[in-house]
Amino acid sequence: MFIGFDDTDSKQGMCTTYIAAVLIERLKSYGKVSNPRLIRLNPTIKYKTRGNAAIAISIDTEHQKEVEEITIKTIEDLAELKEENTNPGVVFAPNVPDEIKLFSKRAVKETIRIDEAKKLISKYGLHHKGFKNKRGLIGALAAVGAELDDFTYELITYRYKDQWGSKRNIDRQSVFKADRETYPLTWDTVDLVNKKIVFFPHSGCPVLYGIRGDEVSAIVKANEIVKSEPFERSVLFTTNQGTDSHLISSEISEVKEGCSYILRGKIRDDPHTISGGHVIFSISDGSACIDCAAYEPTKNFRDIVRALLKDDVITAFGSVKNNTINLEKIEVEYLKDKFTYTNPKCPKCDKTMKSSGKGQKYRCKSCKTYSDEKDRFLVERVIEPGLYEVPPVARRHISKPLIREKYEKGKKVHLNR
Image (cartoon, rainbow, N blue to C red; front, side, top):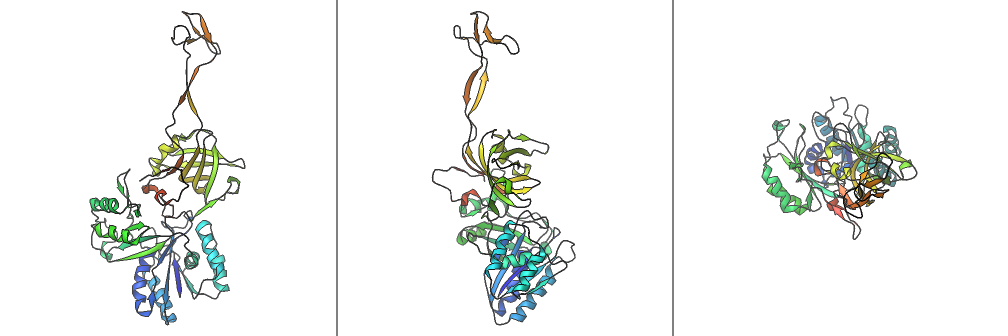
């Protein structure tokens, strides 16, 4: 049996992954429970709490009724049902039809209505339960249908309940040591450039910290190095985090609000900084144009963006909101030549000529020589072609760090960590 559930937390507390951890413990005596999957859905959904995660587990059992009852009871016990925007859903499936797999792929990239999830659940006769407006059925069904063509892992540790809401006690130096000894097989544990630890949340939820990576052995090693307050339990999830599975390759004219894209275009104007420290520019691909933004939380990534110029060609990666793409990465493909201009030198005495007046020629009074144009010198660009990323402190869960990027031979990757 496949079990999917979603929308159990709120901005005030709880975590859907914690409910998975408790549920796994409660179901162990009823059959063999699989390693759970943490599925990040469309990151632009306005109803999300933080990372828009849904959970799926599977269990080999002969006690279907009891498993369903325990699952529903666990959600009733732990979900933030009193919060207005918490609307859990749980789906039970004996198998996963292709139509549900396709639904899952869409849920990572698009916005899906509750009615569409309900119709699929009804069509295949799936046991389920929705709470309140039942929005969680969308993520529950998507989690059940998720196929992970690319996947990573995250080991999440959970605090004892009496610690929820208090400051997390984690030894800073041990976290940086864990990163040094396991990177790049683990990643996004710390942000070296900004000197920050980024592997724990700042909310009052049950999570102590989470270690992400590509190899379980490296994740386990990192966890052994980290020194922290005692934790109640830990669970290893298989996940689509760090995979860019939310991105759609598209022309700008086909862009839809609330989706995430890979868009290639020529820069229409030099980037400029607006109030708040955000850096803005626009690109065009001939079919349409769109604004691009490197917002203040992307920190040093903005310096890369500021170094771009009109007529450079880039590929932008990110989510679209208000017809603006929130940059997660860029690939610089072509850089135009940049020049500086100075008053010309006199060919006789080598002194700098002076202007004769607005719209007039340049002249050297001593030698009586003239010139029509300023001297032009090629200036070295402070940016070079290649892939650039936002720092870990600003990275979305689902965005692929460049350390995981399989890039063409000869293509330069500029890591930001």
